[in-house]
Amino acid sequence: MSSAPPFSATRTGGGITTIRHELTFLNTFRLVQALVYVGLAFSPAGIGWPKLASPQLAHGVAAAYLIFALVALLFNRRSMAYASMAVSVTLAVDIFAAVLAIAAMHDARIGIAMMLAVNLSAGALILPLRLSSFFAALATLGILGHTFFGAPDNPGDRDLLEAALFGLAYFASTTLCHVLGRQLRATEALAEQRSTDLANLSQINELIIRRMKTGVLLVDDANRIHQINESAWMLMGNPRADQRDLGQLAPELSRRLYHWMTSGKLDETATQLADGVPEVVPRFTRLAPNDDSHVLIFLDDTSLLSRRAEELTLSSLGRLSASIAHEIRNPLAAIRYSAQLLAESTSMDATDQRMVEIINNHCIRLNEIIENILQLSRRERSRPETLDLGHWVQAFVEEYAQGNDLGGDSLRAITSNGAPVAAVADPQQLQQVLWNLVQNALRYGRLPGEPARVMVVTRQGEHGVPILEVIDRGPGIAPKVAAQIFEPFYTTHEYGTGLGLYLARQMSEANQASLEYVRVAGGGSCFRLVLTPPARGPADATETVQVATR
Image 1 (cartoon, one colour):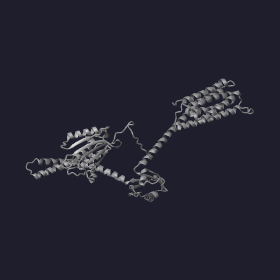
Image 2 (spheres, one colour):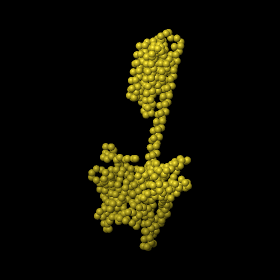
Image 3 (spheres, rainbow, N blue to C red):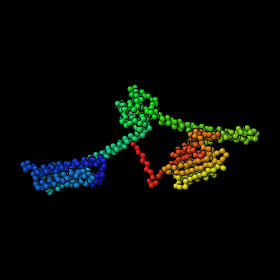
Image 4 (cartoon, rainbow, N blue to C red):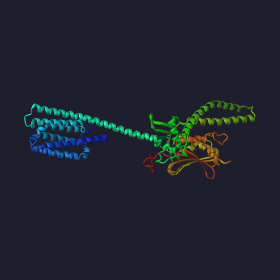
C-alpha cells in the first residue's frame, strides 16, 4: 500500500511528467465519455435505443457532465499542483454521474459501467491504493444501490450478478493499475537517477581529461581534431579555436599518425610541435578495437617526465645518503676518539699537536654534515599552528641568548607596535629555520674587528602577509655568491657544511613559506621569510577571491 499523502503531488522530474500525461488522458477520456452520454440522451427518436426511463434526468445529467468535462480539461495544467485532490473530486463526480446516467438510461447500463472502470483505473495510476480502493468501493455500492432501489423492474439474479462482477472488475482494475503505475514511476525515478549520475560522471571525466598534464586529442579519419584538452592545446602552441586540421597545426604529428596507422610502428622520439613549447612524445590508440575512424593521441611532456625522473633520483639519493651517513658515523667516532687520546699525550711536539687539532676540526665538520643529512632524510611532516610572530620571536631571542654565549655580539627582536602579526607555521620547524639564519648572521654578518649586530624583525607586508626578517650589518653577500647560497653543500667558509640555508629553505617550503636573500642598502644582508597568513572568517574577510574553472 502506498504511503504517499492522499492530497498532494510530491513527485518531481519524470514523475511529474508521467502524472501530467495520466491526468491529461483521464480528462480527455472524460470528455469523450460525456459526449457518449450526450449522444445517448439526445439520440433521435427514430432509433428508439436506449429507452430513456427519465428523459429530463438523462438530458440534464448529460449536459451537466459535458460542461464539467470541458472545465476539467481546460484546467488540466493548473490542477497539476494538487493532482491527487483534483482526481479525487473528479472521480466522485464521475461515479455520481454514471449512477444517474444508468438510472436514466437503464438499457445502456453495461456500457456506462464499463466506461466508469476506465475512469477508476486511470485515477488509480495517480492516487494511493487506499484512496483508489475507496472509489472502487463507492462505484460498486452505486451500481448495487441502483440495482436494488433504482431498477425499473424487480432486480433478478442476472442484474445482481452483473453488479457484483462490475464491482469485482473495479477492484481488480484499480489495484492492477496502481501497482503498474507505482512500478512505472519507480522505473522512471531510477532511470532519471541513472541519467543524472551518468551526466555527473561525464562532467567529471571531462574535467579530469581537461585538467590532465598529458595532452589528449581525438582525431577522425579526415585528420580533423574533434576534442582537445588544455594541455594539448598549450603543447601545440595555443592554436585558434577554428583551426581543426591536424596537418596544418602539427605536420610532424600528422605524419607520425599516418605512419602509425599504415605500418603499426610508433616513433617514440621527442618532437616539438610549435615554437616556445616543450618537446613531447606522442602515443596513439584507437577509440575502439576495430574502429579506424577515430584515434586518441596522447602527448607526454618530456619536461614533466624528466622532472619525475629527477624527483625519483633525488629520493633514491636521499635514502642512499642517509645510509652512507649512518655507516660513516661509527668510524668517524673512532677517529675522533683516537685523536682526543693522542691530544692527551705529553710527548707530542707542536707539529703533531697541530695535526691532531686539524683532525678534530675536520671530524667536527664531517659530523655536522652527517647530522644535517640525517635531519633532512627523517624530516617529519609539518604541523602548522597559528602563531603571534611578535611574542614568538621575543621568546626565541631570549632563549637563544640564554643558551649561547653572544659575547660582544648583539641580537635584538624588533616587532610591530600595531596589530599583532599572525602566521601559520610549525613552531619547531620555524625555530630550526630561524636558528640557522641567526647562526649564519652571527658568524658571517660582521665587519672585520667589530661585533656582529643582528636583528630579527616581524612585520606585515602587502595584503596582510606576515614577514619575518633576519638582518645583519656585515659586508653583505656578493651577487654571484648570493645566487648559489641555497644550493646544497655550497659554502664559502673553511669549516662550513653548506647545508644550513638549504635545509632552511626546504623546511620553509614545507610550511608553505618562501625564503629569499635581500641585499640591504648601505651594507648588510637580509634573509626574508614570507609566511602564510591564517585563514580569515566571513566577518574578517575584506576581499573576495573568485576562482573560475572552465
